[in-house]
Length: 113
Image: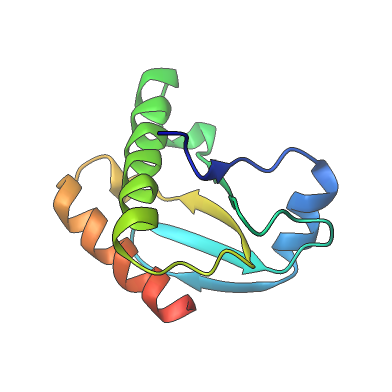
């Protein structure tokens, strides 16, 4: 099965999303909004992990977790495909249980809907 997730690629897209709405919790900050010329059949989402959080292994672990959570969220919850998302992680993601992070993010995406 092909993934319905597509990463943002243009610098302008990132800059536009940073000026749109945001929701924050103890694990991530989510910026979201409408982008021009967006495919509504795919979920435009990008994950950002700052270098302060740790080395490449730790940053990639966080990104893998986020991708896995979003794949589940696309299948199990109703996410608004009209929006594009920018997810910036916080250092607390490394030390917490996967299930806690997953539940929190599902709640946040339900609020965005």
